[in-house]
Length: 120
Image 1 (tube, rainbow, N blue to C red):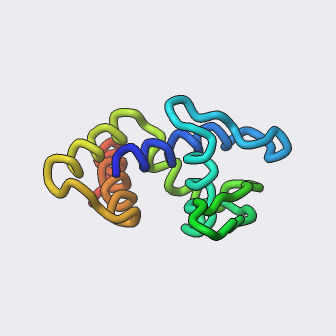
Image 2 (image 1 turned 90 degrees about the horizontal axis):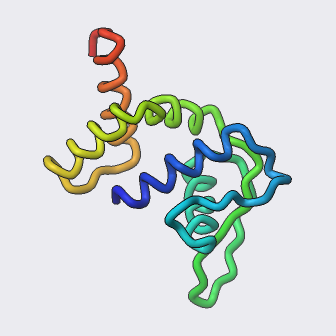
């Protein structure tokens, strides 16, 4: 789970300021097929706009991205801070091992509120 979420975070950080015409960015530590598959997942989750490609016959679905959605920017803003990210991922690993994307986002937001001294 952490490796997948790390890829999501890294990808969103990379494409935040790039144009889709620049192509699918290389994400350090991940092969192109894995990145393309996660683009499909990000489109499906509503974090980016894009085109989903399903080759069928046992091939991983892939996608091409156009831009980050509002929900994608919300997640990225919650996940942007390194300290917040590492605290949340450590809490998941220690307490649950794995969580849904929505639970991770809520956890990140609660840590972010704590950094800003806002009521949780």
